[in-house]
Amino acid sequence: MKTVSVSIVTPDGPVYESDVEMVSTKAASGELGILPGHVPMVAPLAIGAVRLKKDGHTDLVAVSGGFLEVRPDKVTILAQAAENANEIDIDRAIRAKQRAEERLRKQKQSEIDYRRAELALRRALNRINVAQNAR
Ligand code: ATP
Image 1: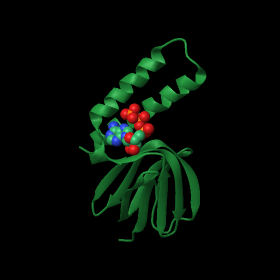
Image 2: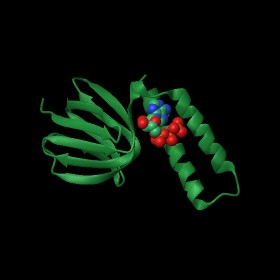
Image 3: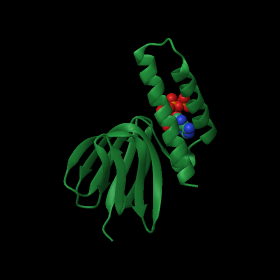
């Protein structure tokens, strides 16, 4: 089985390094599936799950936006934040979700605060989703 080397890197350091058979993720433009030998490309990444298929199982990593760079033998994801499914603190994500929902319910607030709360909610939902799907 052909493989491609994948690195998921954040400002705090590397989160995931492995050779995998396929990478699937959510680019800003839609779902992307990357196999070894894919044409080079760079794409912005949405808040979402990265699925990494290898040896008959799938690793899941929650990514909070960033960039994806594809070369034929190497995929690099530069993410603002990223967590392996088993490193996600679900209680923390649930608390973040509740805080964001509370902020979104409040009437008087600036557009910037609303947008910030929306993004916080999406990060929290993504983490909950990734953690639950991996269990
Ligand atoms: P919170 O309000 O709980 O901090 P957040 O979405 O604002 O959530 P980020 O700013 O995206 O958090 O991330 C800050 C750091 O904390 C990053 O290193 C990220 O990987 C980590 N992190 C955030 N939420 C979780 C979680 N639920 N489990 C594990 N690590 C987390």
